[in-house]
Length: 181
Image (cartoon, rainbow, N blue to C red; front, top):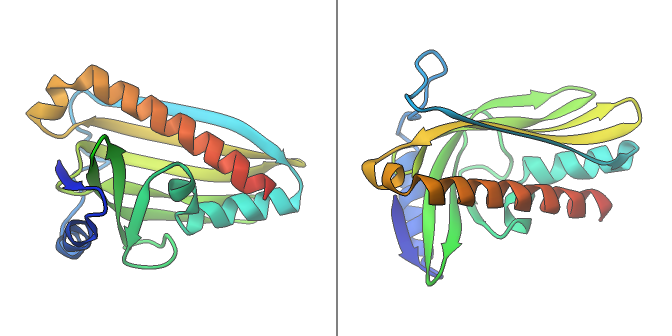
């Protein structure tokens, strides 16, 4: 895992550049040992406007930003093959986490994407974010499969679980806010 001081834009951009040519650390055909699943579904509201606002927040990484992360991406929208470096604040530093978009869902009633971790991410795995219409209701769905990527993240596994739960809670709050804007 890489860290940079707060405001360390240079380190994030350098990691983004390095990550463009790297392969994901997670392959669905050979999941890493110790895989942990995180699933969450919440209703955001109802109607086409809620669906569109939620879909836009996902596609532009606005959900991540609203959740308190920084996001530097190789493309303005989450498209298959694009790379994003997320930065999570940890006290006086930011933990950097590179990912590659591996799936884009673009259907009438489902919008979203999945990204897989890249070398340098503290976890190995994949995370999927969806906005779904179910009748008139609009739902936000998160599905993640992950395992620690290094001995350090394995040793700090209880902390990692807590960080992942907190990030998921913040994503939900961010999507609720985006859907109501």
